[in-house]
Image 1: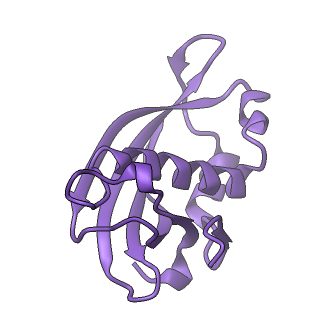
Image 2: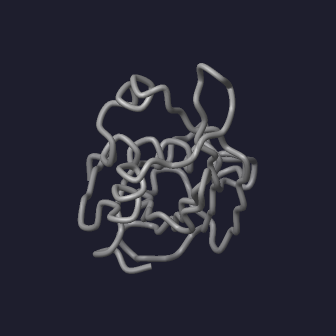
Length: 148
């Protein structure tokens, strides 16, 4: 995935996220997906409350991870994020995690969400306005929490 076509989010690996082999523990990548997608959603839609105010919310229905190389304490990782398939009531977000500095691909993930109406706790069709925003994405946007 080309960095210039993706939303990019940088963060630093913390000591407590590493396992006995001194690499990021595999389960932590679900956290990394979550924080990266949260920043992506915030960039696309503004405050998350904006969705809730429309009686809309998203729920995870699938998360697939592939690990490519180790990440270690104090590495800065760059998540490159963009929408994948956008269906009637669900959409997939594709993420690639690169080690900042050497560009090594560390992991990839696809996470699928279903759009729901919280008032009904039932899935609902993705409105055209949200679909347009998801399709456009946030190419070229970079947020960093890494302090690099």
